[in-house]
Image (cartoon, rainbow, N blue to C red; front, side, top):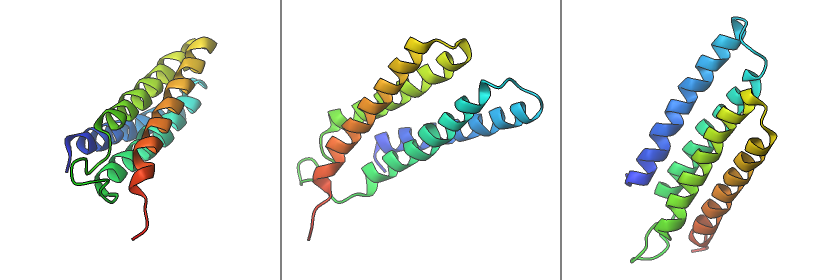
Amino acid sequence: MPPLTRWFVKLSLVYFVAALTGSVWQAAGGPLWLTPVTIHLLVVGWVTGMIFGVAYWMFPKFSTEQPRGANGLAVASFVLLNLGLLLRVVGEPMAMGWLLVASAVLQWLGALAFVANTWPRVKGR
């Protein structure tokens, strides 16, 4: 398993536990701003991170020299997606609109980097 896949998978598991912890806190009377944070931790952090990591590992090889495509794009997708998610976690409780916009843009750029790196690996036989 490539190191980047391990980073994606392990961090997605951390986000999963954090989201469930946030859900328990909210069920016990926690603040309302916690709802979008837990949803983002689950959907972007756990599900998307897990999908990106496993796809990076398991999709067909791009080439013999670069079996998983452009490593820089893959690392960029990891950094941008996670930085955007962390900005969301910080910006949501503080209701900082500009931080939420920056968060969304970073996550979008992370998704674009993932697509740009993965697209060439999806090919016919």
